[in-house]
Image 1 (cartoon, rainbow, N blue to C red):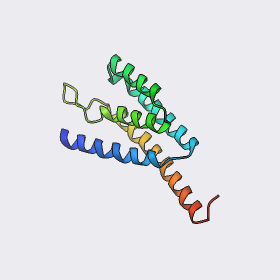
Image 2: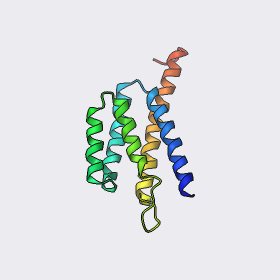
Image 3: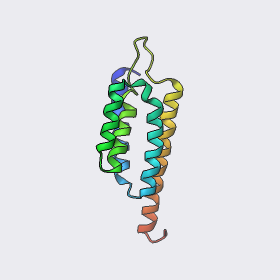
Image 4: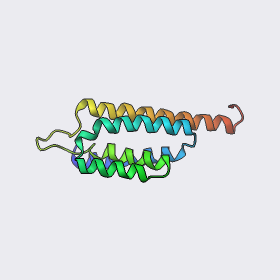
Length: 127
């Protein structure tokens, strides 16, 4: 996969996740998603410069809505997803890429569960 394909894939994933996050309205779901992504982001912060980490931390603190914070974390996590080191290897190691995939899968499940609960509620089956 070349650099442009990775960049395109990253943008599509980011937009899809932002859309899913916007659909969440349950505070517990938002808190769960935030915790998952924040832990992932913390584990990947060593790839960012100290200045980038300070800016990211500041932007999280000034974001008023939980959804905005989550979106900023998603953007930060995916920022280096398509980057290649000087030696031609991806910036994230295989284990880090796997951790990103696992975290995004968990977020996706939470968002899908939230959608399913809304659907059942609307059609009168759910609580």
